Image 1 (cartoon, rainbow, N blue to C red):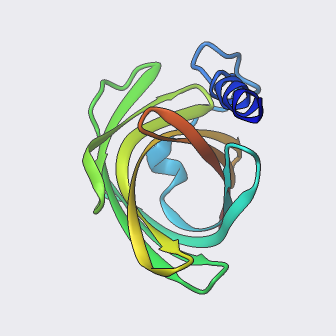
Image 2: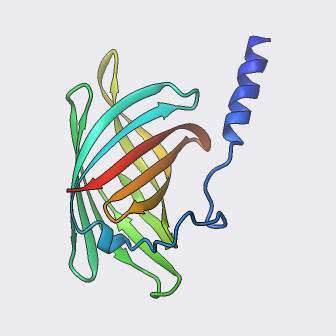
Length: 182
């Protein structure tokens, strides 16, 4: 009986709603990725599993540079256990400048190319990545996961990011991050 209840809970969690470009915008702000991420940021975030347990917290400093063709983001993570990680993204616009703007990006660990789209006050970013994950009983392991990142520009200097994380097609948790321009 216990296994049936757990399976039902996991199925229900996998069916929960997620953002969509069909959702109404909450403000009239037009999110412009290259303008917003030009400069220095600090962000605070955490990963929580599908049951809601916070598994990891972090602070990330970000340096963004837009050269007119590419957006380069240097992300330096510091986790609650003192471990660090750096990820360097290179993004470029792929779509025409209209209501929807599309992007592609690469970073070490990302499998293939990340694909993104801005519309109104939000940006959606999807990719598969090999993430380093600390192990309680030994060295760091690599975990291949899929990210479905949703970002909303809330003010001129604040952004909220919720990333839905899957492994083998199943939801395993989410990452919530608040970005602040410095």
